[in-house]
Image 1 (tube, rainbow, N blue to C red):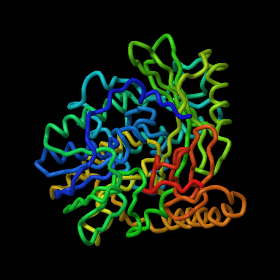
Image 2 (image 1 turned 60 degrees about the horizontal axis):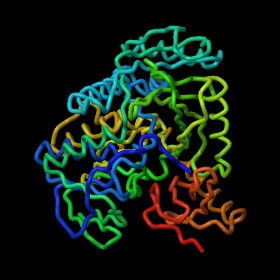
Image 3 (image 1 turned 45 degrees about the vertical axis):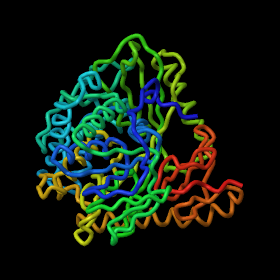
Length: 458
């Protein structure tokens, strides 16, 4: 059963559920860091903003199941980006994340973040070659990076790439702080309020309790957009699931680490309730495609004990991450023909800094400004070839799983999104949809969308 370190002993922000229909300038669907930070920025600009969160507390979904790394070092991504974008565009991506982090930290509560240099490291020749290419990309783009073999890890590395002046956060406390600031600025935040229908042409949405919110613009900050037909974003995103664990340790690390080897691992520490914790994770697969996910936890636990000499983990959790074809998220107005709809998704496991970028881009666009990175992140950017291939792969996987599900999982409940057969996840005790990543608890309640209705369990 999932048990995220970040959600332990955290007093939730006191919020009510929506109890009547209302009108607003901007309605934000989703109470993770993206939605909260966007609401905060809009409220400080005098916008009448309403945020709706389906769960009983904010920041308890994707945000509360992240690594808590707040860094522009998004894996070995800059070499990959240079295959699609020019140097100026890649520099824009880097600077957008650096600036968004710096801007947010000026308003963040000091106890919710700490400085920690970020490292990519390799223990194999293949991983070392990846770092070599990434360092060359740093030089081309103008990113400061230090090649080294000195790390705090308990084993030798072939090479490592260090990025200084990066950060790590307690993601739930960090988000809750900005929720409090948003409330003080006049934003209205509601929990236990699940959106079930979006009527774009009528400028309104409906909740499961039949309340109506009338808006001028809507922001879908739901990790995976509930309304994605207009730009076919439902077919342009693939979803990966990865695993994390935490155990008590005796001291904090100075840095935070991510391997570039084929079996990637992430490492950081955190100080919670006067206790240092060691956070370790890795292993990924397409969401909903694996039934016996316990083996991933067992493999990581074995490494945690044998390689790091630490006790068995007290906390186990997993995370889902949508990916785009070109490695840059979709953030902003969904298309020129739909000026009322804004989305933020496809963070590729780097949702904390990109959530802050999203808040800046969307709040700027909604107040008639221009953000230097809005064209780069635009959901309607013209990269048809790669996107179309990803779409074909996603649709192909969806169609095959629709058919296969009925053949080999006849007793499994159908996902309430598009009817795929779900798969029971033994380790997390969830029903997972292999088509678009919806997740349901063992009672059939929605944990993650795009589904909005519970399973029918017979």
